[in-house]
Length: 327
Ligand SMILES: NC(=O)c1ccc[n+]([C@@H]2O[C@H](COP(=O)([O-])OP(=O)(O)OC[C@H]3O[C@@H](n4cnc5c(N)ncnc54)[C@H](O)[C@@H]3O)[C@@H](O)[C@H]2O)c1
Image (cartoon, rainbow, N blue to C red; front, side):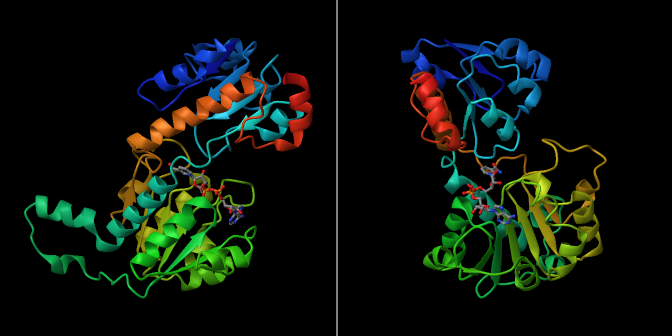
């Protein structure tokens, strides 16, 4: 039994080894995540554990006996789901390992941006002790936060925002108003959300529909005092338009944990924006969430190897066919 790991974000894979031990699986690491190299190792793999590596049609069509592709994470936009489904391969993720961490991180970014913590710290260190340099700063209580996407993470964030006296609204075309109401949140249209929110936090997945949902036109709908936070996926925000909007004062500030790429070029105009906070795709991370991610990810692979449908299987439409083949 062979399990291929394309790459991972853990300090070691001890938990994975422990979880997979009963299956007798041999873990194989891919030295370089380019399609040809991945395929040369994964051709005869029984399962794949992946993080960022794009798993496209080219790789999937070369997998000879793979039962499952498991993403160590929530977003599966790097996996070609349609190809996996037509190849009869189950795709699974770990949807619930970092709900607190990401919502805490979004809140932290918002609080730091609104309270101007980072420029204040910089100023104090350079020898200037003067709060007047940082006006205006506004009170949180009574403001409105607009959440774009209303899945697991923003529901958790909504509770934290409410504790600060912030009103929460959301835009999510796939959520029932009664479910949002149960969380004490009203669903409104995207344009109304952008026009009326003091803070906009992005939590929708990267899909063709959400690509650049924040762009030059939608940035112009926002209040000039508004703060934008993105902990979802870089693709949802047009970075070039955002850099311009921050420079021209179209919105007041932004904080991004995710960018178009994993990394940023030294000449990117975003780096010249003082009213922007950047973190390196760190929202998911805590010691506890990492251990949970690794354990739950490896468990998905173990279930597949044991002929059981992984509990976090996403393309469940092939479950019957899959179980017939592997159970
Ligand atoms: N920065 C990080 O470290 C990190 C960690 C985990 C997750 N994420 C990202 O956070 C985001 C949210 O995660 P989650 O666990 O809340 O997801 P989830 O799957 O629970 O919810 C996603 C929600 O987005 C909604 N949605 C889909 N298309 C939409 C659209 N066009 N407009 C508005 N809403 C739409 C869905 O209806 C669903 O309610 C995802 O993009 C995920 O990849 C980032």
